[in-house]
Image (cartoon, rainbow, N blue to C red; front, side, top):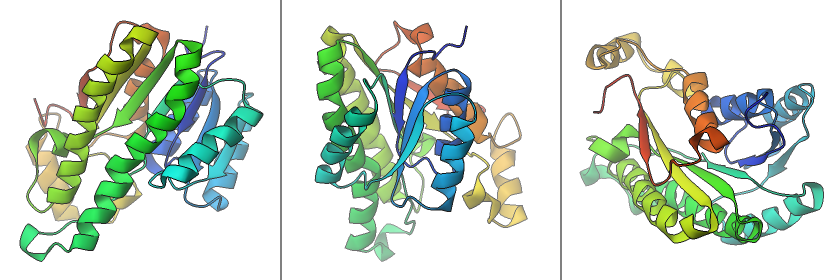
Length: 248
């Protein structure tokens, strides 16, 4: 029995990296998958084909998760194509790193809007569906940087810490309607972005990680799949670090 059989999930920022891995893992476990990104481009088209080939219903949408009206309109469109929404994964995120003394207001606002406001927007848009169903699982992608901070990432750290506070509040607010809300906090995950880092930088990170390696997008997807499934039916309001013990 596939653990997401019969469920329908929305994943934001899913055309590549961790989001793409989540979409593929969800489909492999039987979920119908809705995914979003800023553009419905070649990455989105290829992902949609890959998901459909796994025998599930799948559709990609161009939508800006940091725009409130976009999110509300997205859910209206989704409900025309899919009967329900059982899982929301708020994965959309960006970085604009720099020391505070050099950080511009634009860098701060952009990261807060994409990383944190998007979680508010999508959760607010989806909750009306989940409240009516009296069931649902929301999984927010935070970061170990949101748990422990990091020099040069004040904007990113603040956005990811905000996600944790939001998660705990929504778990208490919506729990009475059988809606769960959890967060994951990935550490150093090997993606296209980290692959561009110099080898000595990557090696330096590995030395700080007790498991002495970076994680994979699939390892993050595995934990999110557990949180989206009924296997975690009594888990809510929690933050699970996926970091090889880098943050304990």
